[in-house]
Image (cartoon, rainbow, N blue to C red):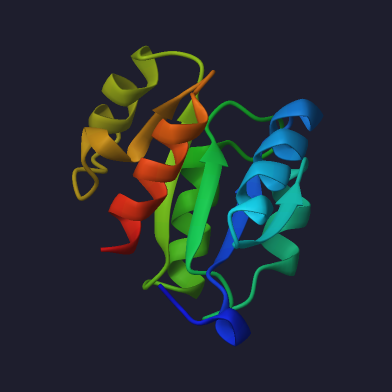
Length: 127
């Protein structure tokens, strides 16, 4: 993990305000620097190479879904670690069908998620 001057930076993109608000509060309390967006197109327009360490992306969003946002973010910064947020297990199968085989099932967070599990997933992505 980075030192206090160089905190781990997390991007959260979810069209549900309550999700972005609660995740931001929890993660900031645990020492992370967090930016949130409720609009995937806006998040993409503000995205910068080598700025974020991790992105948590909701799958089902209007305009630009999480899968398409993932592809566009990876074109800008191939080093960022990405985890998908979903309320449905069925999206993992859809992901596999779209030929995104490079990520494991562990990188799908099913909502709602307990605080400890969220922190474990982030720790896993940082290794």
